[in-house]
Image 1 (tube, rainbow, N blue to C red):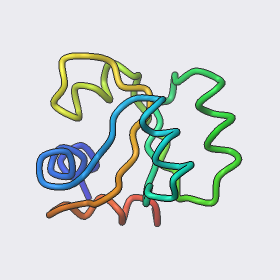
Image 2 (image 1 turned 90 degrees about the vertical axis):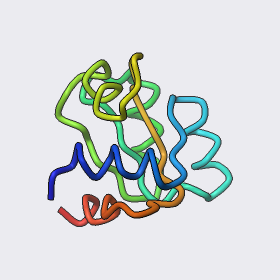
Image 3 (image 1 turned 120 degrees about the horizontal axis):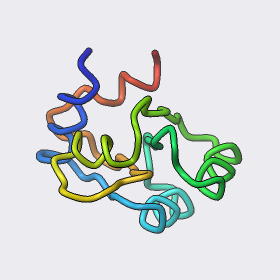
Image 4 (image 1 turned 135 degrees about the vertical axis):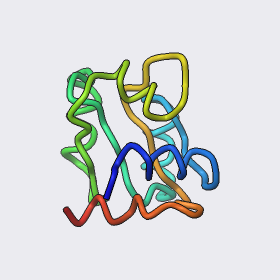
Length: 95
């Protein structure tokens, strides 16, 4: 599975919320099915994902690289996948 391709497809065809605040909201509301965090994300984000019962994928690149993988021209330190759309991204949690 090519994670970057799956992520981009999820962003285009599914429901994905980008950013720490939106990710936190999705987790608190019980909507997130997968949380992705950049390797260099802030401690507050890392602490948040340590406390949840949702699959978490740690993206090996930086937040700049995660933003590019999403097709966005800005940094993304965390994101929540609510609906994967046509993507197989939820399989990443099983790796």
